[in-house]
Amino acid sequence: MNTPLAHRPKLDSTTKGIAFLVVGMAIITAWDQWFIWSTKEDYNFGFLVPLFSAYVLWERWDDLKGLLSGEKSLPATRDFRWLNFSAGTIGFIFLLLFIIGGATRAIFGTGVGPTLAIAGGFIGTTLSLTYLSVRGPEKFPPTLGSRWQAVGLMCFPTFVWMISGPFLYLVDNKIKGELLTNVTEIVSGLMRLAGETITVRGNTIVFANQDAVGIADACSGIRSLSACIFVGAFLGAIFLQGGFPGSLIRRILLIVCAGFAAILINIARNAFLAFYALKNGSRSLEHDFWGMEMGSPQFSKLGNVHDFAGNASMVLAFLLLLACVPLINRLGRSTPLPSQSP
Image 1 (cartoon, rainbow, N blue to C red):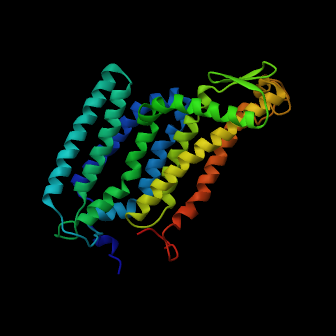
Image 2: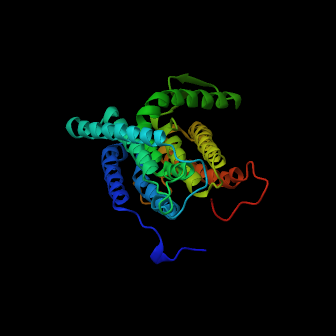
Image 3: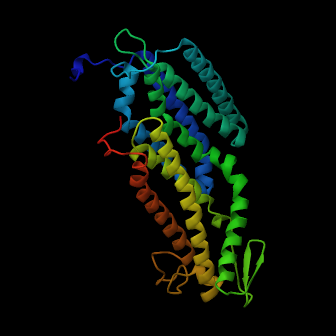
């Protein structure tokens, strides 16, 4: 039986104040990462992060509000005061980290330290406050299960900010060179298997006719890798169903699949461009498929060969991720999927 709207519990003033605090921290986090989104082409997808984070939060709001107001409660083990104290202590530490990061960013400008401190502080503070803000029905204390479910609902809206900014410092700078080298080795190996005579100089493949094509930094695949991980996390948050820990395992698996899809498709894209350059000349990559130069009246709206291959590979990667969603959703299930997530 549904509770009449007039008698449903509402969020108390403390919870509303915490919500305003979290929104303010999200705005500061977006302000810090805006520099990365606007100056690093590999991270242009970051402009979508606030929108996607807000959408997932809106989509989960009914469940989250029910837990925060005490309208909804899960039967589980009793609440533990030492966990509440630990959550409060952790939240204070992360809030302090966020403040230090924000002050450093304002004084010294953007950098790895401020960005990691702001993003990490935002995530830790938000999850800790969510844990503490859960209410029980009427005068009863909240259960441990209710607290953890609320934290789970907030995971994507918070952790996604790690992909859009700190990912650059934590992963990008460490693996881009390695990816570039591996892509060059694999593409050159494929060309040798095809019987072509080539020479590899650094990240440049030199053909027998002394024409050459370079595997540039943009071809390392880091852009498709970071974007696919972001999209995989979003699709997992919206479409993958089931309770804990099944849903968590499926979402991690989808993110792993997103990474593999990005790497494999990037290798295929670079191989296509190398063979195309071998057949038509390296300068043909800057022309459209009909040989028209950029800026000419007949130049194709599809763009030049190089850019078209990059855009097509991204679309293909996203389509593969969409195809993986129903398959991963059925892993470990012996009964039909419920219409809604629990």
